[in-house]
Length: 294
Ligand SMILES: *[C@@H]1O[C@H](CO)[C@@H](O)[C@H](O)[C@H]1NC(C)=O
Image (cartoon, rainbow, N blue to C red; front, side):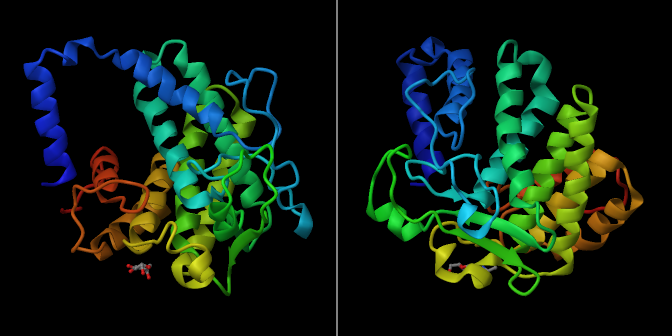
């Protein structure tokens, strides 16, 4: 039985027992946004609500002279994996663009969650020609379970470059920055413009130097966040977000020219940190681009 089938069976059982009505989805949403504060890395602000989490990883990147302090830890570990991190920011930004006015007091917390991510993504892309794809030796980290406040495992930074490209991680960052630039446009024009400018730059890097970080970073990236679906989907996804943010014909033409190259073997209905197909379909279907067929 697939996970979805199992979930729907559970759902039916729950409904039969009258449990569904008792779920407070508003509370679940509030806590899911609060969760981001528990995953924060770096110097925490006075407004931090999860107060048992303290400052950590305050010297990330310093060994190579780059400020990579901040961002989010991945899950139960203390590695900062930029690929899924950027996707989470893209999704948060998309949620605020679509449903921000329904979020109530969680709107402000969501904006803070996005900016905690985008501030870090700006740092991860501050050197032209490089994109920091992760911080923290994943083997050392996973071999030693520690709180980030106490960790003494290697905080190795890993970057993709022109010679060792990573189009999926770079194009996902471009998508996150472009989507977030739209979120901040009515609130902070300067910051929004900075995000959009960087999004264009990082997208160009992703597109011009094509390759998967699977190959470039080898065992440091995969088996952890292998790019199973290839990087074509992130390139089209990044271009689609840049199209929505800029309305520029360049990105429209890019989407039109490349959407046919998407891997036909993976499901058009799949959507997650790796495969972007369903998200591309929804985004592009709303962009009033004619003559794209699915
Ligand atoms: C990345 O590695 C995984 C696992 O080995 C593989 O399935 C996938 O095809 C690779 N992706 C690319 C783009 O090479």
